[in-house]
Length: 289
Length: 276
Image (cartoon, rainbow over all chains, first blue to last red):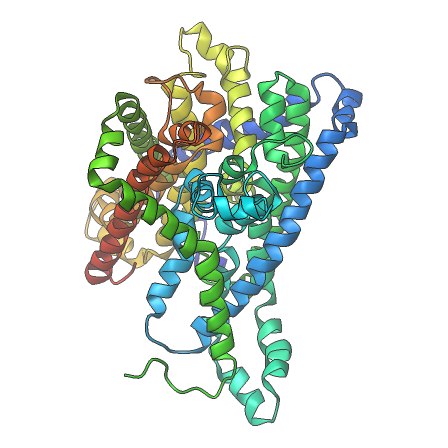
């Protein structure tokens, strides 16, 4: 948001609130944010460090904990690039061309955001579960999807499906086609146009979308919980392992694991804010949720 | 009109083909499985599940508390959006960034953090316990968790709209003798009304579908603090696919109604105010 349009700080009280009202409203907003957003973050670290730093680090020496961290990284490493390639393909076709049914296509791409995480897991169970449509066939061929890695990856791809596409589509629409058309008339081939013109033009938007996609991919709980089966050391991602530790009353370990995910969230927010501040002009406007 | 307008840019077929294929495999095929399962049940089958007392109680808890949380977020989210968009004060940038925390923080982490804070021995829970108020393992706990997850929707919907208000309108109102609160009540609030409604609808939709942050603080007592998504998980664990599907279809139906309502509000707002 450009700060140049802001009114100067000294302004007659007829078009703004009195300093006292302002101070009160700021205090109220601050209190609400501290109570609901900042205290939980502090609580995570305080609970994780409750029994000292050595107990905190002992959590990560556990083989199951390391397996959970590895699985989370693996799932994100598969899901995020796939959704990135999809996002670029979808944005290229939607933003650079005019065709019928475009708005329906955009609605369909946004669909996963309006579906409950639990339902996102459920639909894959209905397809691939033991009593699902493909269940008997998969069992006969010895292929495991539900309660195994493929199911976790599929559910993660589903819940993070729109992130890159919905950042790139409006951004590419704003930028128009003239740069690419100029390059084509100068004799560049299609791939060269894409890699030397389009991709550099949208690189900050792409990074922004990938950042949010990754945060959600590593942190997804509901959809993954439904398809994972909670097999220790095998199908437990970090958020699922947090749940197991918590339900076993192993609070320090649960919060220690949670503190890693909190760190990821804080780094994501910081990077996102930095991108908005420095490259706000190279991101889609207005930024959408 | 032909399917596609002519363009000199290459790669349309490949890009659209890949988009449709990927969309089909990841989103449309699994949703078709849900639709197929639901049509196997029929309206009467879904109705029978929806009439189970435990399901009725869970749906009432989910929708009622989501409504209350979205209302609370609408109020405080509006206030936060106003403060962030209109006032300059130290730390504003930080607060602005913090608002997106519920998007970035994994829901399970939020869930155990809130459970720790509001539990009987937690920082806030202990204070409330002195007043005889129990939050953890009651519907009030669900309410708190939903306020947390849905807050950004209210703030981020209203903030750009507040920033875009043409302040000369407020100046005109003031020169015509309006008191500040009259300007707010008769100029600013009506202008923001579509945004308020859309923010509320988004917050409501998010709250209804939330699972991870709720289950730890709710206690999940049947008929008391059990939300609809928890019931879906329970039915799935019992391999009751039809039962899980029926609840899922009801929730999806509500989600689509909310989406449709948002589209109506946007269309109305474009006609009435020229923005959406």
